[in-house]
Image (cartoon, rainbow, N blue to C red; front, side, top):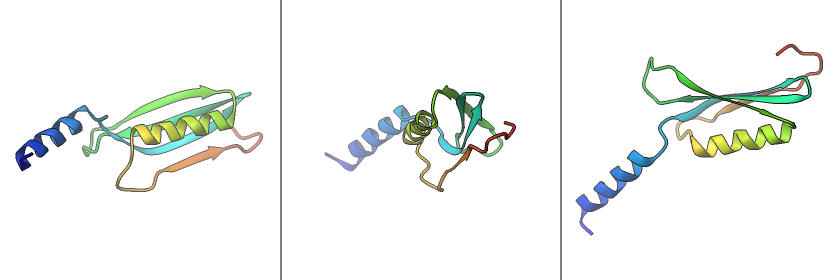
Length: 92
């Protein structure tokens, strides 16, 4: 396979890949539920972020969803901070 063919295949793979990467996540307790909010950035300065929100019955489910999103939108440049606000009586 020629070098140009390999580049074309790579370009097609990149085009089909999800755009953006996970930059930040926050898990909060909301009553008896847990909410997850993740920020996805497309890498273009000034473009803003896409927010993915979900609600879960347990902290473990919220953590699993955060991991799934991290796999779907991998950040190759930086470690991603996921804050878990599990302090009783806190206001979220």
